[in-house]
Length: 294
Image (cartoon, rainbow, N blue to C red; front, side, top):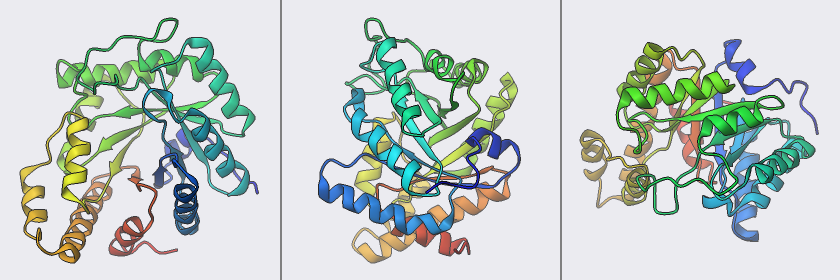
């Protein structure tokens, strides 16, 4: 099945299309793949601007990522965004992966440096024969792909300052990136502060905020820690007020996310990018709260 329009993501955003997008991760087994496709089919009616498929640490899910992303391109009307990282690959291997994406009908990629195996704060050591910076990967892919990159509401953990982090984002745009997607946003003010820093150094590409509702405080806290961040105290307070009530906790997590999404859109965010964890219900619940229907 082919879409009537396969415009690149960057072009869609530049033309002012309000973007709703969903992110999935490569399943580890058949049951996980069935769950993934259930989520894809349940979210497909919302006509997302694009859907993305992540790339395992150190490239561990490379073949599955390319296969799933290609299947989305072939079997759905949705525009797929394939992830790619510098970690664990030589330049030649990266070129081969990009060729695999193109052969599968995938022409949009998210170019990431990737984190060392010991976490984002660990010292970065390039793969021999590989690339050193995300901007190098952008430059490699940009001639043939629409390229997106990562942005960080609180700065990347390895950045010496927020200003330097913004300069790195500018370098990625100058290398050919057309848009950016942030790590999880927990406060609208953090996202808008990122936009101000980016604008101050000359970044002009659209930056989409990444959304993950807090349905399990411990899980999201661990994910934030992996990014070198702490959850905002006011968010933790709202969630922990329902610590003994799983139903109430989930409802509060959806409410917190929906309120933030409303603030982001009202403040001019070009759209929302949902980290789905391969499940659709929470995202659909947020859409209901935002009065977005199929």
